[in-house]
Image (cartoon, rainbow over all chains, first blue to last red; front, top):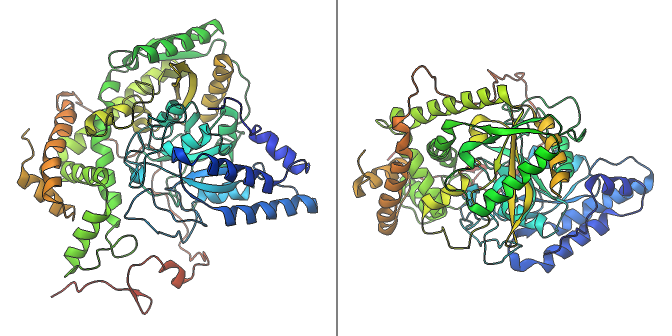
Length: 477
Length: 97
């Protein structure tokens, strides 16, 4: 795969758009052409040619008239197919939503469009964002741009592969247990999971509502920060949104010296592949050489985070997926003899295996007799984990570790063992449980496969985290 | 904790309104048991004095003004994804026999 991008930094694209040096139509056509030329990776579910080109012409006409255009003017992007977008179906890569036409758009999409960005395509994912490889897509498996026999990670695997394949300057993902960061790690991209609530989820297919966030996948931290800057902030359509930083997320001072960074001990132990560990240790050395104060810190409950996650997430999934009942939208079993059969067969035939597995698991942990032992216990261990994060952040400004325990695994390697697949999330689930921001940035390659470095900060410290990530990215380049 | 039996899986499927094939029932019994054994490590964790976390936003009772907002939606457009429509209503099977 190409190491040089055909895309300028997003901020430069907008500048050149404004000055009339480049045209939005050319950018959109270039993006669509790249997508068409790289179909064999199966990153894309649908393209929005007509709508995208019409929007490009509108923006070009504005520039010609002398109007001021937005911070993302003419920038093509790709949305994971769990975002409601006009111009193509929204399927969440699931059979049950095949053919669903969004009656409204996601707030994140509206905000990006208002800034001049143009959605050109919808990317593949594990159906309903349930997975870590895109192998759970009801349609097809996306191939890793670095090695076609390997997965791109998931669930935002199509989005990450699309950025790695240079199809667009950025893509949108969603992250519940690692679905932005882990595929970014597997494909050599930057993946940003904001503080819980920072970006509106209105118009995004819900998975685990106490965990879900929206974020960018991009080539650089600067591009990711710029996209976040456009999307962040309170939305009246999502009552869980929080206030954004009053300052821009793209203001970097790049100071590493004396920053206190804790290496999560539990993320560097057993289960981490030696090549991943070596890449992270090399990154740590560079941070130390740059004057950062890096030392090991223990989060004892980090080893429990995956178990907490695989109780709370399925519980929320089972609740969110109850709306797919075959009556209001999506697949319906046409020959049902009564309403009950219409429900059970629409759901039984419409959902893929992983969605059913999670609905069953969630139903179990929420059922009478098991609620306290599983669900409530997991919620309480979640508190314990949050307390440990708070204690850690009294000692350090940031936490660090690998994004995933391995580099990209082979297609089919974990497909027959759900629990083994779940372990791919072991480093990423802690941040969403605590609601804190986290980012994966490239930290070199091992045998041609990218390794991701994960950095985390306390809640609401998105700007500080992006600042550190920007400086670290330059250090590791 | 006990392993999930064939009947346990059928009962859960009933609660979740999921029609499963015999093959899926057998598969899920094994897989869900394995996942439950994994998450059971939490049973031994000491959480004395701690309260459960329901959400992490820190927000409490987010209210909006009680007024009608016109989003410009057209009922016919909103109904276009409904499997069966009759006179601008969702058509479902009879609920009461």
